Amino acid sequence: MGEFEVIQRYFANSGRHRSDTLLGVGDDGAVLQLRDGYDLVVTTDTMVAGTHFFPDVDPRALGHKLVAVNISDLAAMGAEPAWLSLAMTLPKVDDEWIKAFAAAFSETADYYNCQLVGGDTTRGPLTLSVVAKGQVPRGKMLSRSGAKVGDYVYVTGTLGDAALGLRLCQGQVEVSKKHSAHILQRFHYPTARVALGQALRTTASSAMDLSDGLYSDIQHLLRRSQVGVSLDIDKLPLSQALRDSCDHTTAIALALSGGEDYELLFTVPENKRGTLDVLLSPYGVPVTCIGRITGVAGKLELKAGNQPFAYEHHGFEHFV
Amino acid sequence: MGEFEVIQRYFANSGRHRSDTLLGVGDDGAVLQLRDGYDLVVTTDTMVAGTHFFPDVDPRALGHKLVAVNISDLAAMGAEPAWLSLAMTLPKVDDEWIKAFAAAFSETADYYNCQLVGGDTTRGPLTLSVVAKGQVPRGKMLSRSGAKVGDYVYVTGTLGDAALGLRLCQGQVEVSKKHSAHILQRFHYPTARVALGQALRTTASSAMDLSDGLYSDIQHLLRRSQVGVSLDIDKLPLSQALRDSCDHTTAIALALSGGEDYELLFTVPENKRGTLDVLLSPYGVPVTCIGRITGVAGKLELKAGNQPFAYEHHGFEHFV
Image (cartoon, rainbow over all chains, first blue to last red; front, side):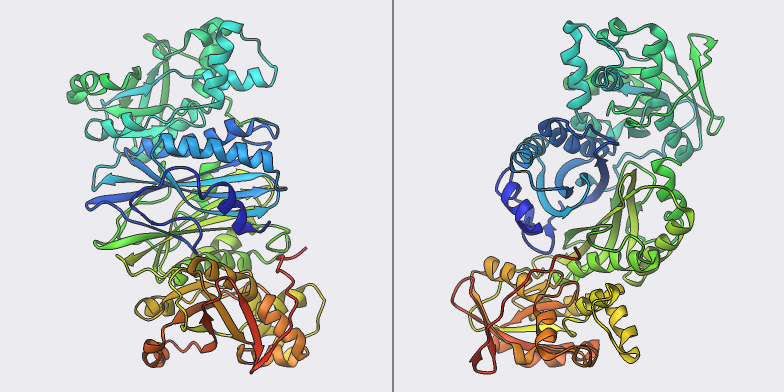
């Protein structure tokens, strides 16, 4: 089966057809019509077998996650997702595997109102690369560079669950039956905070998504905004499942340094804090203030309440 | 060195900065401003070490070719290239290698007036995936689906040189000193026919680029346009280097079935043939009529002058 046929056979006839897709899969490229007065937002993320996922992972989980993590980047910019391209490098064409993967990919793309408009299949070690495209009203995008001294720092959802899920899959931890489904769901089936990201366009001064872990990701925001931050580790939102499954020190380490939460981190100026609760209440996603932006460029300060908190960060290495 | 740093260090500060790039490398995604009344064109192509290139290929040749083959797809759609994203999977961070690769990548992107606006680096077997983005005036894109019965079929440049270059690198053929530089140039440093593709917007009824070889590629066009074609193998444009380096049968086989020429194939209605020469003369790229579209959907007929030409196609498999 040639390169053309894999995408054509497994993907082209499933999923959503958007009316602003003038030309989709099957030509030299796709032709897409942006809304007047909107800018294009483009993000890219690659997942490699053995580095980002277990080679024997359920292809449905993989198809879902590949879409969700890419759309999470669009969410962090306040964009409305629209189109996906998929570059697949496959060691062989395994009909059952690709069918399951493609079904989950299409379902998740549908969920986010996205259409697959291009692809490329090559033979080689299993590598999946997605480019997600979305649109944002001109000048309204969220970026990492707008945080100002005094802004409040927020995160959505809870932190550390996905990292616990990874350790559960690796057999490094035990999680009670009551919590394991939730924890595995958080690891295998992350949710991109799309509607919430769009709602933040008028309120947040900066935003990003958390893929490599709060401790490491926030430093990119500090660098781009040329500010520092003081975080209160007592405020970190931890799920009941995480609290029940490990001691407090481990829970904090997973929340700070564990990756793949795909929650949003954002900053809000003091004068917009009041509108935040009202604005976000329809979305049903908890939002927690965990600290404040400071003037010491690049400095990440951790406190437990009013006390300094000593912490040794070990970077998230996907899995080794 | 983390994922962020590779793109940031080697790519972000080199190359062109377009004024319509509102946000480039270094955030969750790029934000790009399309021209009013233009549609977005997106193409993707992946190159895998051992499948699409020799693992020990000169990184400068690789950087050039990766950009050129992606831009060739934009050219085939009549689009003006603008932005590139690069997903790199690298087995290790080899400073010299990445520097040489990045320099050639940036130089070639510059040449086509393109800016690198996003990237992702992961660890794994060497795989390079580019998404190229361009723009085309609304409704003016070229596609594979507009060929009509009676249209004339053209190709740009000459065919088969890149396939000969591949065989030369593999030590399967000998090429005289006089020709070898040209042949290797054609294989390692293909040219995307960008200006010519844009000039064809008003004249061609369909277009595509030739990456896997004329015999195999044209069938996609036949399928999308629901037509057939009759090609005259005596008309195939063969370079002097190709003619001098192998017998006629081999030269024809390389021109028909050899890949990686990255020339444009396009069709022109009879009433627009007259304007074609005038239109294309400024570009200095030879254009040759090699056949005509027929009504027998899907049928590829080969003739030598007026006689049927028996030919057994062996698909281009990059290299095995």
